[in-house]
Amino acid sequence: MEQLNLPAFAYKIKQSGANSMIFDELRRKYVLLTPEEWVRQHFIHYLLQDLRYPRGLVSVERGTTYNQLHKRTDICIFNHAGKPELLVECKAAHVPITQEVVKQVSTYNQVVQAKLIAITNGLQHYCWQVDFETRSFVPLQEIPPYIN
Image (cartoon, rainbow, N blue to C red; front, side, top):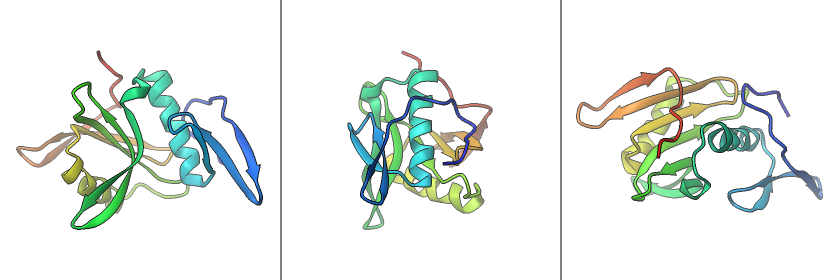
């Protein structure tokens, strides 16, 4: 897998037939190791270890419905009241972060209603604060760490 612009961590990989699997500590199981999953697992560990988000507030690949279509959010972090705080869209390292990707996560966030959205391909990371009243995005220099 490709070297990412995220901190390294002690990942666990195993083979299952012809497939490589990576252990997801949040879902407590091995999942298919795709280029996007490689980025997702690194970003999860960055959120937990470096930014100190509590494990119990992080959801991975949670289902949501938008215009009667079933979608999955890559990572969603909730506050202690159960309200979405941060919605993260992960892409494989070879996928550029384009306006179309920003539109995708913005569309998901119309349903989720997270205060912050982030997009990463493991090499580049972007984060915005969402202002629902003005329907605008305020770019942030970095993803905010967890605050109690």
